[in-house]
Length: 210
Image 1 (tube, rainbow, N blue to C red):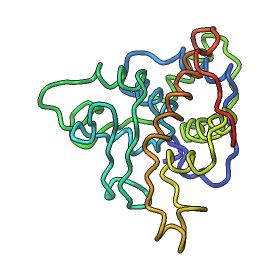
Image 2: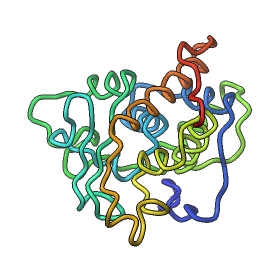
Image 3: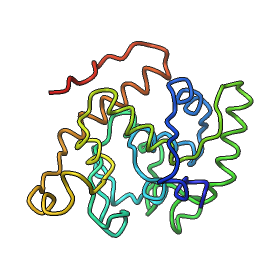
Image 4: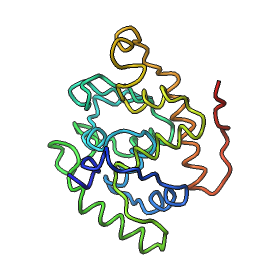
């Protein structure tokens, strides 16, 4: 499924600039795919995890993914910034199992054609954006959070990566979930994204490294 970027996960190094980030956001319409794209940018999660998101995984101010729904098979909590919560609230429909998807059978489908239409809208707007894949949004969120001063182990916690401080023997003894720090990081990142999109200065200053 190259449209989600999975095939290129370990080989690409594409990070969107602020101008490119703004171009993608502005080209998003009111469709499921556009909402997913915005959520992927705001949360840094994998496309399959958000595209197949279930309402029983959405807990007010966070998403709680069970281990069977994550790549590393570990449960993962994703704090929701206000912009991310606002996007999800628009899709609440009584009785639905999945947040996205036309027939509610297995979440969102149609990645390829939806991405093509998004690219067409970006091009029509005359925005400068070279080839990109949806997975680049995850890399962009991670890289830009680090540039804003978020500690590397917190970025890893946001992404649900098991490496460094969470791998091997260290991971056995370090069971911290860093939920408070993840929330602060995602709030900081969301404010940066909205400031870029709205052509204004951010209201939250970057974190200072210890």
